[in-house]
Image 1 (cartoon, rainbow, N blue to C red):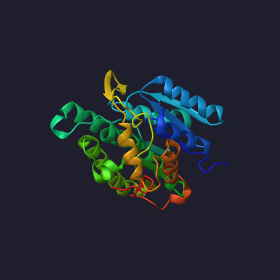
Image 2: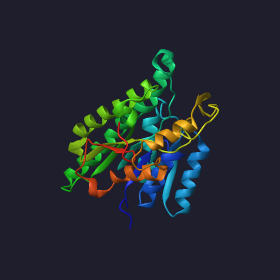
Image 3: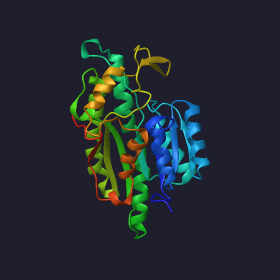
Image 4: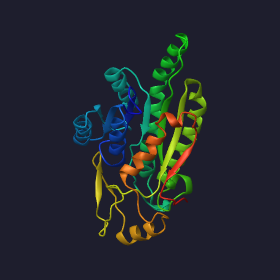
Length: 276
């Protein structure tokens, strides 16, 4: 028996990296998971991994920045599993520049994926959550505790040179989290944030030549970090190393467990002791 048996979770950006590990962790604890990715193949691979381990999952393919995505994401959970208990807003990427070189396109793209998309998903989820709470109350039953975990970064808690867009979006997530904790407390929903430090993913892997890129809807976005800078960053972390996606997923899982049912509006920094 897992700690999340009978729960239904949606995890954005869960085809790869940290999101994949979050989906796998929630499923391993009994949750039925809706997996999302911009691309079909990574999402299908995560679903297949969950099913191979004996869990249940379906996919919802598409960009979280699409105007109708929030409704599609939520309805995939409702139509396949009958409800919604856990929302993880994880999808995103970085598109860095110092402010004098940052374009409006860069600013808007990062604010859209990291702040507007979570807002839309949560807005779409509200009617489902409210109806479920009212149904329980009308039946004289306790309202089950539901969970929202929004993903932030230490760039959002302390800023980071070259990431004005990303830092602003992640700081905005803190405000969104605290507001929803107040609005949704009456539905017995906890709303928290996990802010990641240096976690090893495809976005932060070593790139000596600076030519590593990812494709985001036809745009080639530079990713990766200079190996010397990586080494220097790791020396600044009290635990002496970067975190793994599995460790990052573990921090998110903490907010999904029954043991955290009275913890809300909080930001947990998962950074190996490094805090800016």
